[in-house]
Structures are given as C-alpha cells and as structure tokens.
Image (tube, rainbow, N blue to C red; front, side, top):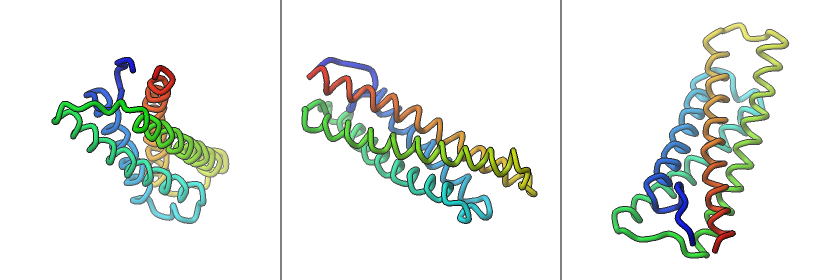
Length: 152
C-alpha cells in the first residue's frame, strides 16, 4: 500500500479523526443547548448521526494514537476495508443529517420567519455549519481510505 497523507495510523490521520470528533461534538452541543430542537425530526436525526460520528471518530483516533505510539501500521487490507465501510456509512449519514437540518433551518427560520429568539436561530445555524465541516473531514478520510484499498 502507498503512503498517502491522512492514512490510518499517521499524524494527519489522527488530526482528521480528532477534527471529525470535535466538529460533531460541537454540532451536538449547539443543537442540544437550543430549546425545542426535538420538535423537528431532521434535527433529531442530525443529533443521532453526529453521535454515531463522535463514537466512530473517537474510536479511530484512539486506534491512530496507539499506532503512532507503538510505531505500528494500520494498513492491513482487512483493517482498511473496515475503515472504508465505516467511513462511507458515517459520511452518508452525516451528509444526510446536515443537509436535512440545513433545509429545515432555511425553511422555518429564513423563509417562514418563525424564529422568535435570535440566539436560538444562531445555535441551529452553527450546529448545521459544524455538521457540514464534520462531513468535509469525513469525506477526506473516506476518499483516502478508499484510495488505499484500491491501491492494495
């Protein structure tokens, strides 16, 4: 397998996983601290998708840290296949959650003007923005691991 920046077990891979975890946790925290998010199904789905992303990214960040400390490689075809499937599943779920929440945010709070609390609207928008930033980092990881698997 070739050495690509962002591969599992490298420093750039660890940075990608930590940034995924931070963006997903930030998205969850902004959404949960806003009142009434549970009345919108898309926002609940975003919380579920970002929660899964936090668990997946945190687990792989721990695995990357272990590989860096022990100077091990995580490039066996079985592990890379697992990373590809997990990254693509979480990537799809995160994009769906971010897109549906963005649509609801624009519809209700922009087009219909039904946002009476300005601070709450900003929390929804920041949560969606962080979800999209999380998805961008997941997409980079997904493409990197897919490229690794294809080059094996």
